[in-house]
Image (cartoon, rainbow, N blue to C red):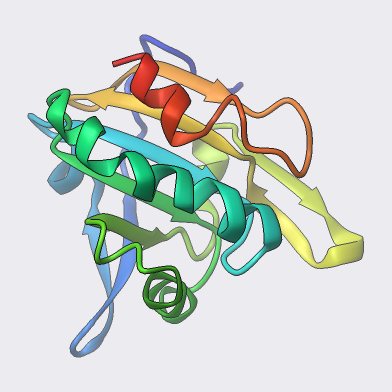
Amino acid sequence: MTISAGDKLPEGALMKLGEAGPEPVALDSIFKGRKVALFGVPGAFTSTCSAAHVPSFMRNADAIRAKGVDDIVCMSVNDPWVMQAWEADTGADKAGITMLSDPDGALTLAMGLDFSAAPVGFINRTRRFAAIVDDGVVTWIQEEEERGVCDLTAGETLLGHL
């Protein structure tokens, strides 16, 4: 079942690349007592994710924070090295966007937001979504209906729901 507004995020962790290598980031440390704009993408360095989705949040990061959001987090089923490289390539870090890895897709699967497209090597990847999470509870979530577009899940759309 796909997570929806009113649902609490599942327990678990995402990952980031730290100085000593990959390190888990407990979901509680991200969401507990905080309002977070969370968005998920099918893959780092893919065309729509790099050209549209991440840039939409970069353009709107200041306005999103001005509406009381404590952090903007992008998650993807990629390894933490790829996410760190993508963060640097897009400049997301300079915009204050936290790029986190869901390396085995555990959170993606627990949220019911997975899909597979074996011909292109996508297995249990994250469907394109955007959500507002307040103290661990999803208050708004939108999933993209068409492949290769970023309209319903863009930073501008999330901003309009704050």
